[in-house]
Structures are given as C-alpha cells and as structure tokens.
Image (cartoon, rainbow, N blue to C red):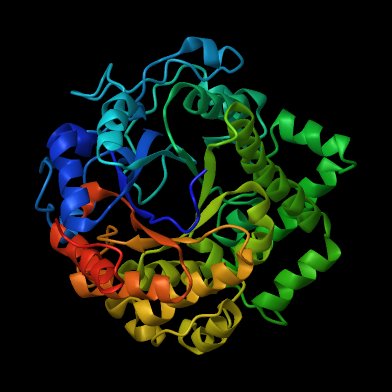
Length: 476
C-alpha cells in the first residue's frame, strides 16, 4: 500500500486521450511539465466525461491537445479485454466498447507498462451510474442485451432510466468488474464513485421515488418494512411536492406542508434510510472484494460534490463513516463551475420545499448550514467559488471528518464543462490557487478532474506552478 505521505498528483484520463495522443508523449508531458505521478483511468462507462473526448467544447472550445472532433459519437462500454469467466453470475454481458480505434484494445494493458517506466501509479476509475447521465455526455444508445430487465421501478410501477442497485444481476456485475480489475492488472488500486440519487432526493428534484422492483420489495419485506404503506406515503409526498412546483399556495407554506407530510407518513424516511444504506452496502462490498483479491490494493472514494451542496446528502454521507470502506477520499470541487452547480441544486429546492423564500434570501442561511462562505446568489454563476474559501473549506472539512484515518486527495477542477457562455471560466491562476488551498487545508495530494480530454494545458501549468511553490515538483 502507498505511503500516505508520498507524493500524489493525479489526473483523470480517458481511453480516447490515450488513443488520440499516444501514451508515451502524454506521460512524458504529465511527468516533465506538470509533475503528475498518478493516473486515474476511465475503463468502463457510457459517459463522454469519463471515457470520451471533450464534452465542453461548445462553450470552451477544443483544448490545445488531443483531437477536435465534434461529429464523433461515443458508443461507450468497457475498454479492457473481455474475460467472460468473471461475468457468469450476471445478466450484464456483451458490454465491450465498439468505438472506432478502441474496439478490441485493452486500455490498461496500454497504459500500465508505460506508467511503470515513468514511475507512475495507476487506478482504474469507475462510477455508478453508468448510463444516460445528464450533463455527462451520455452515449445515445446502450445496446447491452437484457439491460431493460434490470431497471429500477418507480413508485408508479414504471421502469426507470438506470439499473436497480438491488437487482442481483446488476449488483453482481459490479462485483465481477472489481474482481476482474483486482486479479488481472498490475494496478495500485481502484477509484470508485457513487452518484446515485435516493428516493427522497428524487422527490425533491421533481421525479418519482425509487425503487419498487421485486428485489427491493423482497429485501424491504425481510427487514420488516410494509412496502404498500411506503408507496402510499410517497404518493402523498409526491403529490405535495408536485403541487408546490406547480405554484399552489398552502395554508402554512410549502416547507411546513412538506414536513407535515413526513410527520404523518414516517414510512418515507424509513424507506429513504433503507435505500441509502443498501447503496452504501454496494460501496462496502466493492471495498471488501478489492481487499480479498489483493490486500495491497487501495480503494479510493471519488465523492460527489452534491454531498456538500445538498443538506440531505451531507447528513446521509458523513466522512467519519466513509473511512471504514476507503483507503483515501477525493472530494470533488470544480471551483469555477461550482457556482452553477450550487445554483442548480438550490433552484430545485426553491421550486418545491423552499418555494416561499427566494434563493437570494436563503443563500446566506444555506451557506451557514453547509459551511460555505461565497459570493452572493446574483454573482455565483459568473464568479464561481473562490479557491481560498471553497476548495480550502471543503478540503478542511474532509480532513476533519476523516480524522487522520485516511488521506484526502483533493479533486481540483480543471476546465470542468460549463453550462453556458457566462459561467465562470477556469484559468491557470484558479488552478494554482486551488492546489495551494488544498495543501494548506491539510490535503495530502490532488487529482486534476474531471477529464484530461477537456483540459487546457495552460491551466494545468497553473497547478504545476503551485507544486513548484510547495517544493513538490521541479521541471526537468
């Protein structure tokens, strides 16, 4: 296992970047120009942000490396060789990528030998959910046979957009993926990211609650939960939130009406906890499989930025708990983009439970709840969040939360895709200040995110300048 005081300067890369630029020139640049010594490699996804080319070129232009190709269509899938013997216990088969230039190739077999020559660490990077994820450059189609049979069922009995995490065929698929990586590659560990919305999270965002498939119902029944009462409760809550979103005036206001519904229908919170804990169980299981296959491998958690922008998720996913199934944590902080992300989170709440107060009025109060100290609501989108407060604050929170049990490797946003031309732009100075803030807050390393395919080299130079100031790197 890696010494937690050892240098950890990582970057997330996609198979397309390796194909477009060549592994040797790319690693030479990483090592000699930017001081990078850790590769987080996208190996399995149907999301352009994880395994494709730049998805932010419409607003940011194409970066000064790689291939500019606005017409390419990501097909997605697995970018390692197929080993059918690991997937005999799941319906998820025939999921190899068919992207031109990458089909039939194994991205880890290409990356690992050259990474070792450069003295670099390698971690496959995988994230759940895998499909049709808004804002992540999803592939148009997912052609895996039998996948519709694994989908979630919402409170109205309709199939959803993602496989159910309690479906044994889907759960064992993830077990198989992790075992495949851990047994067959000279890697340093695995980075896992869990970004699945909970039932109550879905309700608050305007969607129906999940999941009521036969597997979720049976699991809940075995835990003594009355599923029909749960469905009735979510029916009442969905009705209230939809009425609020449609502008109905309640006698005591939208928030009180929402809380009153929770009071009279406590099954909502019973189901919410059951579902969230089953979601956490998947993380724990993957950690255990990794360690059983090879105890020297590290299991790192790539932690959703909604965990610190949403009070519900912040309550549900405490750092102190996550250290029991991780060897390090990587909080996501895309500082230039963060203002827009926070605003989207709050707008969803202000359409329903917080409808009776304006976002501008609520912002300083919500900042207090969430431990933020940023600019006013009206400036957030164009200014973003400041490295000295936002990146520093989130890193310091994580460091306090893990209490020295695991290191914090801060996720530094470099050209995270913007949603509009007026959104704050990433600059070399922002990256430089973010890296300095992460180390000043007690972080033990950084990971440039979300994908090298969308990053401008000049902005990575900003990170290199910070590493030089800290005495961690000097150009060769």
